[in-house]
Length: 615
Ligand SMILES: [Zn+2]
Image (cartoon, rainbow, N blue to C red):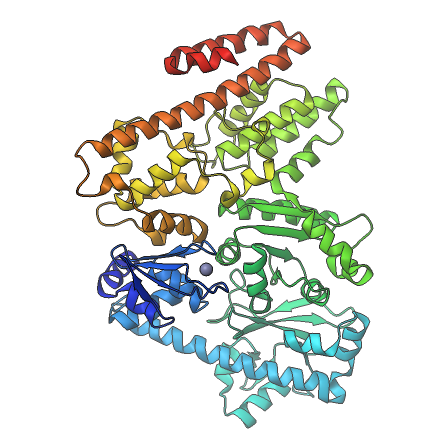
């Protein structure tokens, strides 16, 4: 239904008209240009193609379709952009369940409204009444200044008298709310025999807001030893714990600017980071980091930095979070708190500069996990190395991306001084044993390695990966003509695994799955969509009507050959390197195997024979 609605909306609306409602566009040749609303500029590099219904900014390199534009400019998620544009296009979403959908939207708006009023009430209690004294004392103890607490909208939920219902009384008497609505908004529990009791009592309360500052719910921290220490709003029509992100409204711009979101564990950690001037910091609220939260953060930043507490629980949480982030295809970095520091809040209060330095020194996620796995193994006894190899393989098995996995596998082999082949075999065995793992995880092929001079962290981050010319060209073809993706793979023998640029690989995959019609830009995430939009705005000369009939096929063949060639060269370099270290170590069996692989590679790629033997 949603897919049809997307197509229907795209058919009815013109991107130039929609974008033109937000900024001034001027025709320039076949395109429209204007000053980019997403970065500061004096000469227009924001480009809209009417023909292709796509926008791209050559300045900040963002781009996408109509939906991506509305998401960005309205700070909305895809669903909200869809609703907004559906409204404008006169397209009805979900016709059968419409009534229910509308009702839900109204409940949600009402819940946000009541939470907003509750926030004002709590903030008033905190700063302007005697009842707020314990809250003020806790903030002072944590070194949080009033101005900072007010930015976050921190408040205090009072005991609420004998009925424990101060908020309920306030909202019903002063604000004309009904008890049922207050309960529905997650602010109170209904009592037997009528009436309701406040959910949050005698707690410091942190509003959890959406991107635009709407209050969805609260996290309440107990004073003293009361249990539970943290209490959150339960699931309501507005608050979903797996989607809500504490601090996102205040961190959003900094996240975009810094191109990374720093995720910490606690509310006080977020506030402390802001106090230290580090503003791209958020926390998952009342739950482990969830995929929906990662996806939301991915809309703002191409990378996530996980900064969890230094204790065992924090480390375990960071390790779990890595898998969640990886599942969304977003590169993560991990920063580890120095020994003896409990949480980021403590570190910031002790030394703000140390926190900044730590975030900047964050290492790629798999590097950190691999380092932990290898510790004690390198240069150790046979037993120690074997145990480390086992731990390393279990880390490697978690890496979803074949090329990245292979890079770390090579590194682990090198550091433990074992053959990459044996690790590869162990990995394959582990992957066969673990049920539930997708079958697509096959033997890693020799791919780009650290020895090619590409630093590991840049490989882990898609938008820093260099885009080889031929891969850009092939991507350019399929965004204009998605049907060509099948020609490339089925007829011309292109294998997706050979593409080194992760975004190009996903663009190619998406094109393969498109059945008829234009390229489905909206199925890509923000970073991939930006690259696809850039390729769409640029011309592919061979696709012009005036170009020779077979020019396209010739160009595609040439490109596929370039891709094969690059793959072969990478493999050869890798084998040569392994060969050398096998020679040095006197591992004759391995030398023979590797020499045979090199010969086989040369036989497969006769046109490379010269290059291969020369190395
Ligand atoms: Zn821009």
